[in-house]
Every structure is written in structure tokens, then in C-alpha cells.
Length: 127
Image 1 (tube, rainbow, N blue to C red):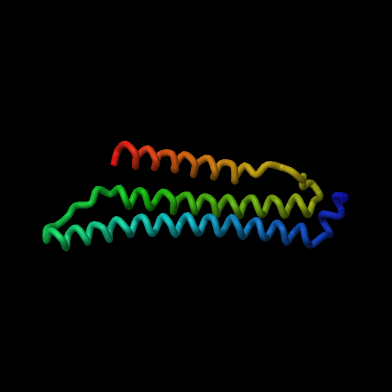
Image 2: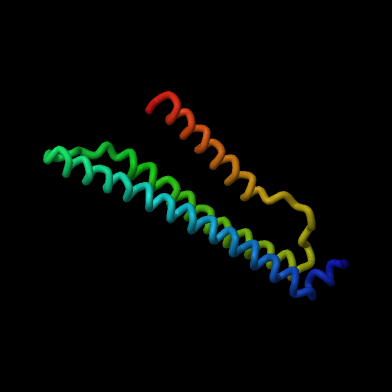
């Protein structure tokens, strides 16, 4: 397909839209998980407090653990918007190149892998 063909074929734009929406869902999912983690600490604190009838002080670990995925989700969504706008501009001008590696996806996968390794180490050795 010629460069002009990419500009005229609506399927290319629909594919870009689907990719953009997938990134938005990923960001929203990260924010939802972060919110749940942060609120789960509050739930556990309330459960311990009701069992012991004494005030239980928070360490702040669950809030920090919840805020991190929320912040990552926000970063993913901002990155999705900028990448989508750049892709549309490249499609419009005919400068889009097929087969380019998605650096945003690679970075997110590496960050999540590092978080997973950290959680595994914490669960195995520190908890």
C-alpha cells in the first residue's frame, strides 16, 4: 500500500483508534487497581481495630502502594494521548512507518515486570 493509501484507508485510522482505546483501558485498569489497594489497607485497619477494640495506626504502605499504580495509570493515559495524536499526524502527512516498536508498551511492560519481581521478593522474604 502506498503512503497515499494509508491516508485514504479508514481501516488504518480505526486501528489507531482501537490501539488508543486499549491504552486508555490499561491506564484506567491501573488506576482502579491502585484505588482498590489504597482502600483495602483502610479496610484491614478497620477490621483489626474492631477485633482489638484499640486504635490501630497506619503505616501508610497501602496508600503508597495504591497511589503508585494510580500515578502510573495517569502517565499511561497521557502517553496514550500524545502517541495517538502523533500517529494521526503521521498518517495525515504520510510519514507513518509500519513495523515501528511501541516504546510505550515496552517501557510499561518492563516497569510492571520490575514491580512484579519486587512484590515476589517481598512476599517470599520480607513478609
